[in-house]
Length: 189
Image 1 (spheres, rainbow, N blue to C red):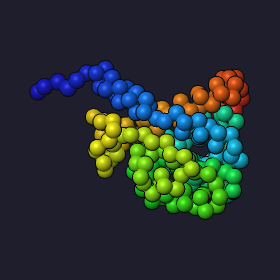
Image 2: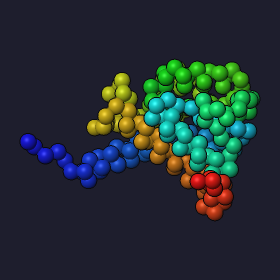
Image 3: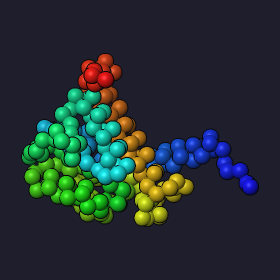
Image 4: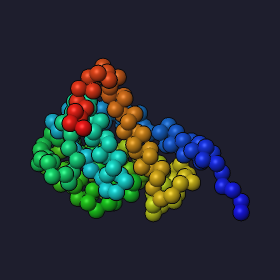
């Protein structure tokens, strides 16, 4: 039996794939998202499956930045209002529940940011700003960045890294430090 590449070799493949995706993100789109974050009254995030998990992690960091943030579908999520911002994450841009939430947000006069691998998708067509992550999806294997990983793993990883990079960018742009963010951290753990 032939031995597979080492753990370290596999991790280097994953890191290189993510570095390639992140290098292709349009910096102007990130600047626009930063502006939309500052303008919004409230922030809402939505996604399904692993994309939802990424959005939940992003919501926590947005809250640490001092922004009022909610996850769509949670029991304590209030009504979205005009002037709010929805950030929707879907590799295909066609996930039914995510698209329905985005359509509702747009009809309620909220702004929409879409994180997707499919810039011609239903979700992207609704958006005020699209963050395109040129990765394969679980149904489409062709993309600007090839991946050796299963299904949409590269999309979800690069979405998380993009979100964390955006938070660091916001911290630096808004002159926030770890102490300031730490004041928002949960203290009932």
